[in-house]
Length: 212
Image 1 (cartoon, one colour):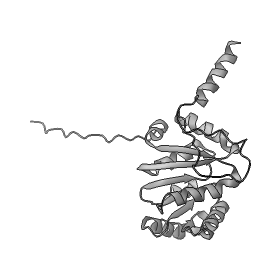
Image 2 (tube, one colour):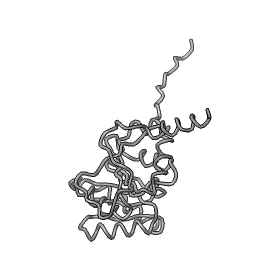
Image 3 (cartoon, one colour):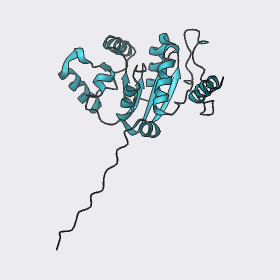
Image 4 (tube, helix red, strand yellow):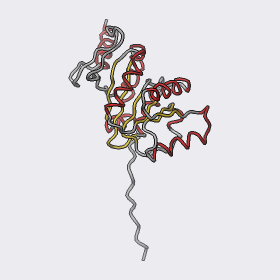
């Protein structure tokens, strides 16, 4: 008599761009590049001492932002490849144990850090590769939220990210934030999802040109 066949229930993996985007809470705050430090500080203070991971493009910028936040009495550290593996691991441990409120790093190092579920992931810069943005989302906890600061120069990067995800990211104003520079050239902010899809609009224009 043949032995009974054991049934193994496959664990589904939802790692494709669309699934990652659908399950992650995301929003964008438009601002000028020069206002990003102040805006980030306000966001961190509004979290009532909750922890956050900040992702930034360069190692030098990570150190500068860490120094700025420390001058504002915010417990922040930066970890990146120039600081070595041991320092990065120590930074991750300090964050996991609650000894550090804000950990600042780059996309490359973020993927190598053994961090517990991230509830607040703050994108100081948008990455040049949409896949890096999706990797950020994958590091968050189920209840986590990704907030990105968007300068005028990064609008094309946002479009590429949204096209990859096949989903738009809601754009909001940060309540109570007062920009230090003129923001007429910043992407308009809205507080609801009810807006004309950027990608559908682009597609319709392309279709119109093809008919001419």
